[in-house]
Length: 131
Ligand SMILES: [Zn+2]
Image (cartoon, rainbow, N blue to C red):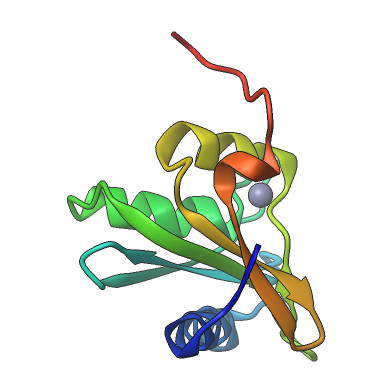
């Protein structure tokens, strides 16, 4: 695990801005924002879309990046919307997605300002592999 740098704090702020602009705790329960930074420096954001089988904010951010042709990811983060805006660890489903798409991507985790990065592959040892 490594401490995060200024670019990582900017990524956290991008995720916070995404959910701040789209927060909805009443109707569609958009309550989490995420941001992924690509190796080329571009940043894509997303918010969760709630449904019976809804998608997490990380999945929306990564899917948006992939839709825009990105394939190489350096860092991803998710934050809680509303009061606080603290960093959230990826859920099990997202850990599998990260293992599938970008096992070498760094994931920002931690709490209350004490953040660090850990490689996605380390968050899901012995991940399921299709092939
Ligand atoms: Zn998730």
